[in-house]
Image 1 (tube, helix red, strand yellow):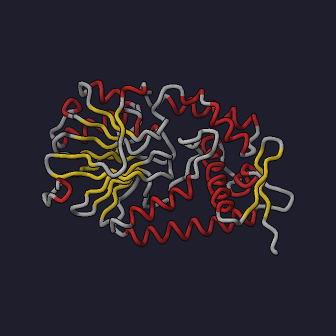
Image 2 (cartoon, helix red, strand yellow):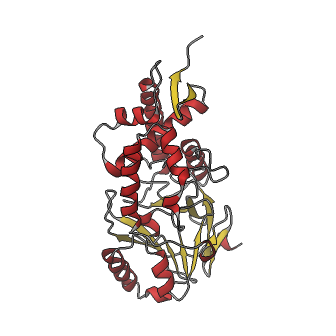
Image 3 (cartoon, one colour):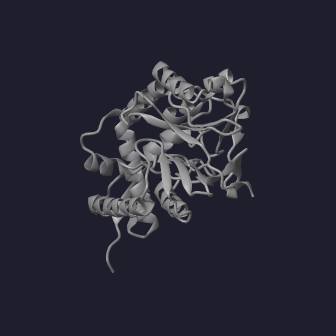
Length: 328
């Protein structure tokens, strides 16, 4: 089988600058036929210049790339996909069908606004978040639905020298994917695994039923456990240094999530608490983009606590209000 090929696969990290708080993003050149780029960086002059330099170091030009694969469709990871595809004479672009960030019309999606309203976010804050995201969107080109192919869970990206198995690892986004080189248990994980920080479970409509919220944190815990079954020896993340000790990181993530669960549950009062209230209490200093991420974090933890029977929730005036479950 292709994935058991014992030959060495050349996975070359290239660090690209971003205009975002997270800092540089890692993209990965698979220097095997067909030449494949996993993630692209944002649509900035600085990022494309750094990418060209990284490719040039390997004696490769953008026009040599045959396949562009996206771990997920956030601007720092997908921003250059369209222009690279065009320059590479219609290289194939692949992304999971549950991703929406690369599609035309995302900002007109009323579902996202509905989720924020249900979380108790005031209208003025929602409008500020929308304006801010319109600014962020300039760092990525959109695709029409027919312009990209789909990544399928458990399928393989085949190369002349082995294969990468596609593993759907939802959590950070609904369609986030990781890629496992089973021959040596190397993983390319996008923002599913980051060495320094616990990835943020971003507030998203559920791809199956967009009127519902995607259960991001519960899904993320499943994804972490699923990657663990491969016993990774080396994990390349979307930002920062690679991870050599997955078990240590897995346990650290679980501990951080459980500690935050306790903190969130303690912030919920008998009078009733919204996700917005929790986010402001958890992260009082945050502004602009980080307020959206703070709400995402609060919602994700409240959803998990509710699903585990630790909190009650009811709808009041269009907002979800959480209360402690009274002890029997």
